[in-house]
Image (tube, rainbow, N blue to C red; front, side, top):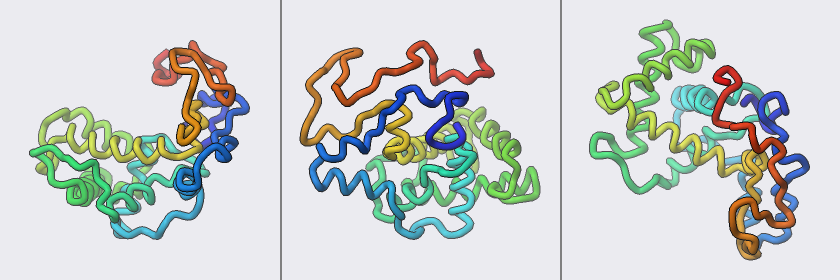
Length: 214
């Protein structure tokens, strides 16, 4: 993945002609306002400071492979959640609450980057960032800066994916038709589509496998 919409060479164009926003007339006013707010200017940063914002942005770009513009503004979306205390409502006993876990883990990531490459994470090269994250992932449940590495990884990916896949641009890439309220869905079942849905043009192409792994 590099930018949305994806090019056919990057696995895009699976649902040709599909645009979830073409269905906005079927949403109620509240639903339309929520969806369209994700397309406009998001609030200024209120939780992350400047250093944390830079680290978080580089981290999310790595996790989601967002290398080019336009990007889904994941950092601002996560920042808004944390500023509003909209966490998942739970955390592991071995982890601090999400806001503190985010601050600690981003600081730790910068510490690792400085120790290994002499620069904060955001200033490292793409490949060096990737190597640092791969090292953390390989730790499994072992300790990483006083926290289980697997729990930190889960925190990062949970927030990243929740933000990314709440954005209409990502919905278009996966053929998701968006909110069902108030119209709803009538054609329930595997491979049964609504008139406004589009069939996958490449159903045999597994999007979870990279071209290098094939």
